[in-house]
Picture 1 (tube, rainbow, N blue to C red):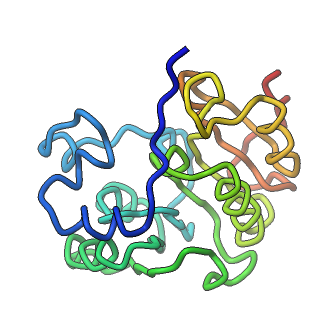
Picture 2 (picture 1 turned 90 degrees about the horizontal axis):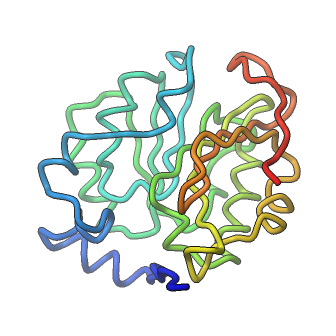
Picture 3 (picture 1 turned 30 degrees about the vertical axis):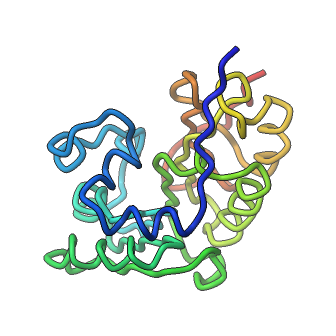
Length: 206
């Protein structure tokens, strides 16, 4: 079976951010108009987010900030490519509740200070080791009852994809609700104990 290979490196993203093709690098096959005006995410499954602090992990040029920042109290975008962050700041200069940070880890975020962590098309570009590192860091920065909205590459379709055993091991400390099982596992993962987001404990998919 053909497996997709999307793992790329920091310099690639720093260089691509300086071109007008950055949107195609993030979402293969998408038009610039759709990239700038459409946002389809399971984030929309969350309610009562108006007082939440949201962390966008791998924010890139900050394209989704304009869609989610108005729905939360504070939006924090983190990316390891400084040219991406520079573009994100400019792209979202009219939003008053956003902050963008250049970092390759989440040590710059205070522990248990974030209500929601969101990743969009990020882990398909990470090695398994990087995925593990970020998931562990996400758990640290989330408040108890906080939510991790993610798309996890599956072993069947990606060179860096996770098997169900690897997925269950990495998310052992979370309660998981899988919304869409396609070539990626689109999940809402909750750090115990569950509280204000009103999701019941669910069994991990076998």
